[in-house]
Length: 238
Image (cartoon, rainbow, N blue to C red):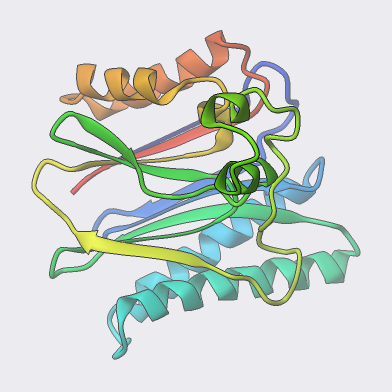
């Protein structure tokens, strides 16, 4: 399994609040985009990544239930850890998260909270696998604005769900059968706010044989478009 991770502070921010982690041997990858200002966001995102990696890594060999329940439990544990750290330090902190897991039987699962996204490139077609937990996405779902308007809406970065905001968090999980040749992308909104899905698809297909080049090119495109946020990508080819 090939997994490539790249993260950049961007051209505006002073610190990087994104965190990335993966275990290629066990088929696990996690990306988080922290919130809470200087240091707090960095702490929240790193806690989320570390907790989920640990929970999934140890749980895969012991868990007797369905994998969706295991992934939800891992994300909820991360939420509890972020909440506890925030209370202990009397600091408001939170983070989005998107986690990817591939079982030995070929079942692929993605869990997410917030507006960090997951995509799959299959047969030359890029498909978004997550739905943003954001105010703008809610307005799109309700038919109040269109997809084109959502791209430039002033409140497009206001999220409605994140880890660390409450001891209870709703986790969205999707699963499907992995197919040979599938390529997965996990990314923070620092990429998708500035690089459209058509361009992302073109980069992935152009550099399909060299994942490090594809990851670097995606980050570069976001920075060339303004780089107003941290930008992070995880590319996964099982």
